[in-house]
Length: 281
Image (cartoon, rainbow, N blue to C red; front, side, top):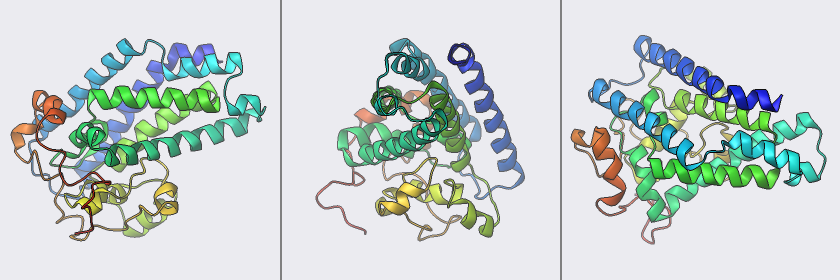
């Protein structure tokens, strides 16, 4: 079964990516939450262009996909779950939950370390918030993220099927919770106990530092609630809040070639969590 997963991994991931992208894009057209302020053609070409670049670069730097690493760990008995002989179904569930917690902690780290924030802030520099924002990450951040993910996979001994499930879920929920979609408030209040919703994650893309440094979850919402980083609503409301960060406000910065050099420009700014003068202002 694992060989089949490896053979069809790309097709499975691409199928879910384009399926969720199309579904959320259609929802955004029929029931948008906010009025977009920037050219969709410019933003979409750049945001999806960087997805293609990141995919090619990750495959070049890491010839072995995370699933292949999981298969190797399983064959050689590496990792806590393999050493503990956890039942297969439990290993899958635990792996997905642990990997999700690792992504949460990684996200917090990229907001805490100024050098890492320089990479991650390209994601936040989008001046609108829609489904393509969920795929907008700097290539260096993607390479670091894949390395961290592989290390966690080996450490816990995650089964290959769990890694594939997690990859598909993370990709799908990232596009879902970055989507510019309106849903009934009652449904949102219920869903955000199970999965990060667009209204929950949009707070994280506020221009206000104390709102940016909240709601770090991508998939499961529990970590924010348990670790004190949860914020229910933006102060200015979802339709009036300003999206982005206090630098790179020029729409020209939305072009792909400008996005790639953003980590090397200007100061880290007022967003890193551990800056000494940080406060909820």
